[in-house]
Structure formats: structure tokens, C-alpha cells
Image (spheres, rainbow, N blue to C red):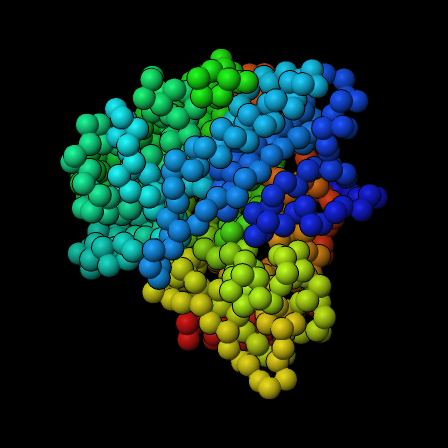
Length: 532
């Protein structure tokens, strides 16, 4: 593994599209079709990354480096406060469009697509008719909070401990099972010939492999473990959980290992990739863990995207539960070894707050302007920003919390608010790394990726607050990289995890500074959180 300072200036604007990264064309310079034509034809893996803000396809070579990519922004629907929806048909259309765009270019330049991997926003839930393809309602996004009262009723009835012990999760609207229950109660599912539920990985695999014309209905453990319906011990659907939420197991996809042949892409759907197999699927945060080569227990990654997510590899045994955190499956590599588990902290809003500053308050022309504005002042001047727009995740788990900006004075300006937001991003992750430490999980370093990780200011604040070295990945496209490498592992493009670990590089290492002022700021922010 290498950690070095890049000697070529990166065009940072490429790393920001609402902090989900339009296309962080890896290595040192953007790769264009013109550059590709000068390369010797190579075997490529395509990663289809269906995120919260948009859908991208990224092509990787045998060194796990980006050689091409395409991106489309995804429409966000907000019917009422606390409700967030996506159009599943639009997700499928954008997936096909980006796959076709990249496949056309790389084929034109003589390259060969060996396989495709999928990674996706995880808990977002889609209801559809597997016989007709009909969608009775928009997808409910992981940020959606409409099932909060249902979660509260289940908790009051005493079901929380069983859910926690079986699934590793907490009773929160974040996860898929309560969204499925909402569909059953409100979306006329009984009118469908073959009523089905899917997370985004399942929806895309079904669609790409033919849909109503023989599409495969499959998922894998890193996504299934986010539904609140999978047993962490058996890696299969839990009869106790399907009974609790009254979800027929026949509506759920088959759970396969994360590395296997999930089906072949239909030439009717993507003509340029007809017959190419999908051989790897991972949920986006587990995919970033894999893409960051966090293959050993104790290695942790932090992804700063629409939300902020911290995952630590904890080995091949279910570690139980930890206060303020959830336990999840990292991946199941099938023939390559036992399933790996991860402990996770989740902050629901990170880059989404930057988008809000830009679009609703007009503080920024583009998300890339945030660091310069935040660096225009030496500190936040007492301003505290709590980005709890859709409740608070780890380690607080307060579904009813809402965002706030406090500590305003007549001297506070746009720079102080921007600085307070950057500090809040670091504080949210600190709250999670503190929870890891309190749970006895020893952390050695944080490997950072995602659009906001391009900010040196944030990385410096994170290292000091978490009291850990922060290593920024040379590729902020860790999520797509994880999907590509897990798919390539299945077909033998890479021979082992050790080989993949040797390909990981970091752009820069940030060391902790003297923590006194950071501790004071964090204490003030925690008080603001309590008021939220």
C-alpha cells in the first residue's frame, strides 16, 4: 500500500456534485475519450453505482484505476416534510443510459468489458409487480421518516431487543422493513399479480437481466442485512422478522453471496453489454469498505457523501451489538472465504446539507465553493450547525430531531455558517469513532473517501477530532471501485484480497493536531445536538 502526495494538480470541481461525486476520474488527470484512444486495448470491469444523488457507471482497468465514466443526476422528490422518494423507473433508465454511454466509448477504443459489478444506496425500498413491472408508488428513500410512528409503536411493544439481537439493527425508519410495511398498508399491493419488494441492487439486477422477460430476482447479504429482515447468523431471511413485520418471504429476493454470477445482461436492455455477466454486488457503504481495501479487522473507512458513514471491519464472526452503532454484513465472498462483518455508524445528512446551503440559502454557487468560504474565517465564531434534516443517526438515533443553526451573533456571516457546517461533518464522524472506542473496537486509522473528502480542512479537522490519522484515498470513487473489484475477483481478474490490498494508494495522510480547541467546539456542538 502506498501513501504519497500527488504531484499533479487535481481539478477539484470534478469531485463535487452535491458531494456524491459526478465523476472523480481517478489517478492524476481526467481521462477522456481522446486519451483512451491512445491506450493499448485492455480488459475492463464496469461498476454501476446507483447512489442517492445520481447514477454513474465507471470503467476500471486491471490496476483498479478509472479509465472512463458517465453520470446522470437523479430527481429527488419531497412530497411532505420528512418524506423522500425516488422514481425507480428513472433509476433504471439512468443505469441503462450510463452503461450504454461508457460501453460505447470503451468498445470504440478496442477495449473489452469482462464483467459488471453493482453498488447501490442500500435501504431505499421499491415495491413492484414482478409479472408486469408495474410500480404502484415511488421508492421510499433511506432518508424517509414517515414510518417513525410505526417504529415507536414496535419499540413500545417491546420488540426492540429481538430486532437488535436478530438483525444487528435498531428500530428506525432508516431501514427497509418498515418501508415494506408502509407499502403493504398504503400502496394497494394486493392488486399486483406478483407483489415484490426490492432494494436498489435487486431492482437493477432484475431489470438489467431481462425484467419481466426472465430477470433474476436476487440480492446479497450486505444489502439484505440492511432490511431488518435478515438473520445475521444464518445470512438468510429471518422467520421471526418476516412475521413481526408481516412481510411474505415470497415477496423477497433470493440471497446469494456477494461474489457470484447474478445473471447476464439482456441484449434487449443494454445491447452493448448483452451476455456480459453481473458477478459482484455490494451495498454502497460496504462497497466503499471493500474499495478502500479494509480487509483486516480494525481498519475503518469514512465516506462523506449525501450522508456520512463509518464502517469498521470486525472479522468473520458476528460481534454482537454495540451502543449507538449497528452491526451489518460487510460481504460474503463465497468461495473466496467466510463472510465478513462490520460495525457501522451512520449520519443521515452530510453533503445534502451542502446542497441545502447552495440551493435553498444561496450561500454557494457550487458545492466546490464550500472549503474556500469555510476557510475565509479562522473558526465558526460560536456558530453551531446540526444537520439533522431527516433525524439523527448514530450514535443518537433520534428520528424526531431536526436541523438547527445556533449561536448566531451580529458578527456572524456566511463564512462562519460554512465553517460550522464543515466542523459539523467532522463532529458527526467523531461521535461515531468515539462510539467505536467506547465499544472496545480499537481503530488504527481512518481511510476517507467521498466528495467532501477532497477538502483538506475537513480531513485536518477529522484527524484532530477523532485522534486518528486520516488517509485520504487516491481515488475518491471507493464505492464504485469496491463494486468493480468484487466483481473482478469472481472472474479471476484479481487473484486474492492481498493482491487488491497492494493496489490501494492514499493521496495524503493527515495527522491529529493539539485537540483542546477541537474538544471545546465538539462539546458545544453536542449541546446544540441535545437542543435539536
